[in-house]
Length: 292
Image (cartoon, rainbow, N blue to C red; front, side, top):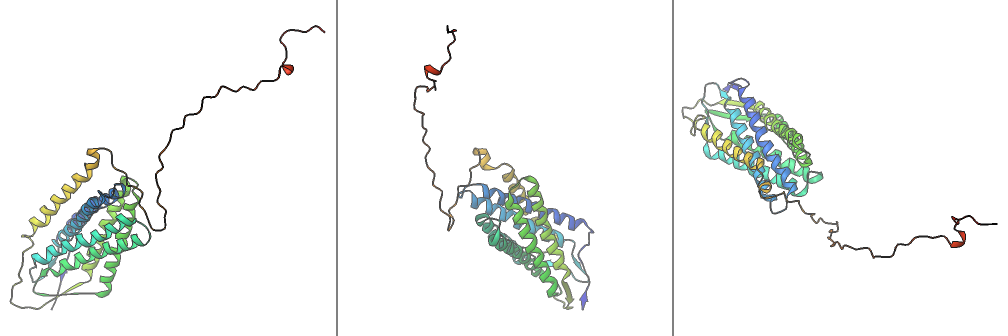
């Protein structure tokens, strides 16, 4: 028996809150990615790892906030803890791979395409793995074309967000990139939910796992606390506290000769007597009148 599903049980509250969570995680993560481009190699992995965890936590929180408004007629929904937190790990790892590619290779060309593709696939993998963690009295099926469209949306928007973050052109660019990243996550989520169909089986066995109420505390308090901590780190840059930010050195790339620094030598000009061009006495005019 096919059951009716409702993804907006609380109206627009859950979609808006979910979008804001995705934007918050995206803003912090992309800001960390932008700063990683400007620091030395020793600081870069830390910034990129923090950005990956921020984006992963943001999209994971967005997914389950949106799922708070998801209901299915005639059956309760439970969540498997292991599968749910596995989706968080997959999101952080795959988003991290994409961010590290862009962070070290630059937000252009093949590196941008590869990083955006991996990041988008990470968003999609988190979504469908989180959906697989649902336990209910039925079976989930998906429309293949709509699922493919949701993955394409995630990859395209993630690529655009990484490109915007790689420009490092100030606060407005970071805000725009965060809005695009939030659009990638929410657009992918609701497109994927539109592809869902639920077929109830009618078995008497109750589903196992944690209820949505039981998952509320770790789902909201934990990631929100981490995002708050990440926000503090971004606002109070450790490099700014210790001194002026270090500038990333020129990196050697294949086919490009390394620029070696030549020590400057200060040359003092030799002291020569002032040379004044004087006309011969014969041609100089006399100031005294001459008798002719």
